[in-house]
Image (cartoon, rainbow over all chains, first blue to last red; front, top):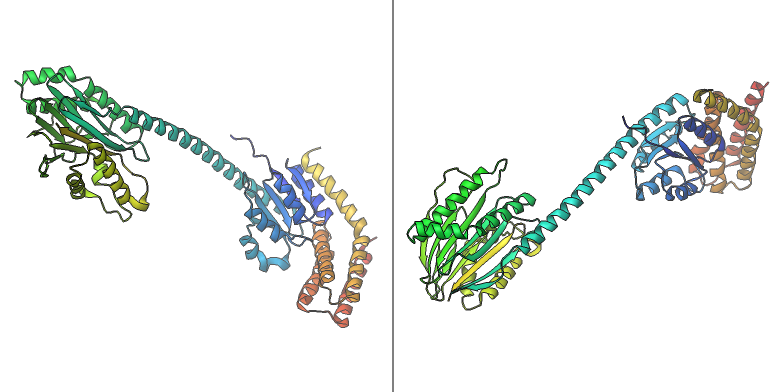
Length: 398
Length: 112
């Protein structure tokens, strides 16, 4: 059981005899007591801190009890100050006023020790509750601070793991990424499998926070370390990129389903490119469709859905094949772009995204990213920071 | 000696002190009333008188002088009722003085 909360009482009355009587009673209860003869003197003592109980007379010179209580309630105190007002029968009409001034309880004059004891017991109960609440709040604030630090760290790690902008063979890669206010689960990467083939992907782990970020890191590690396996799979499929891509995503799904105690899942676009021919296999696993913009400005969304990874044990995936011609651009993105909402809740949408990508056809990939980022911020307006990660991965076939 | 006994002893000492201070308190009230008679329109003086009576009423009752406390409360109420007036008439002053005299008679009649 908790030890009793120490009570530091301030007694305020212009009659020294009442002060002496109250002090004797409170000290017999183990309270620490100090005294003041009017409201102004009391305020000066309260300003020194530590007081958690004030018993004040109503009628006093210089500053009366009502004004004292109002002044106390207007101040900031490190802990709650419980206020008891001494009243006489003639002041009953003013009780509502006193309560509005912040008084917690009343004690009638003439003083009766039994009643005084009961009122103090109630005060102790409230102060103990307040102290417990304050303690809980302090613990919560500490936990929140620690969690915020961890989220910031996870966000920094997420940014550090993003790939360098690069040209891999005939493919130019660029990207735009804006982390949400909370760490999210977007991740993307591209890497060479061998001299002929490249792999690229965008994933979006469900939810936010450290668990989503860790899952995204884990996915990145797994996919990056799979280059040899991809090469073998392509060879096993007789150079069929589509079948190889399907097999890789299905294998990844099986791996994901083995993870226990997670309600997470992820959406993904997984792609393999034959750099020499420009042939691309794209597997869409519940992710927004990639957008192909060919050199003459025609726009083609690719894919029609697919199951997210981590939903079904034996999910099958279907690859979509496209052939890039020189100047073609392929854009992969997360739903942080299309679902980005303005102040009224209206979403940016895929149509708006496609229009921007077409209008920016003569701009460099880097400029496309910057301009799209600005368009999204403009769309958000007063709504402020993004509430989901925003990812755009751009590929251009040179 | 337990804490309750300490409090009881302290209370009895305070009660004796209050009894000893009573003439001084009554004189302070007399002086305050006299000050009001000299300046009937002075609100500060009237508030002082009210405060002294209010204090006597609350304190007397708290130390076991219940009747004295009630009598003081009655006069306090009359003074409070007159607080709305901008100035007190001689008749009103005399009424308060009479009530105060009666209060003192009761006190001294009860004292050994």
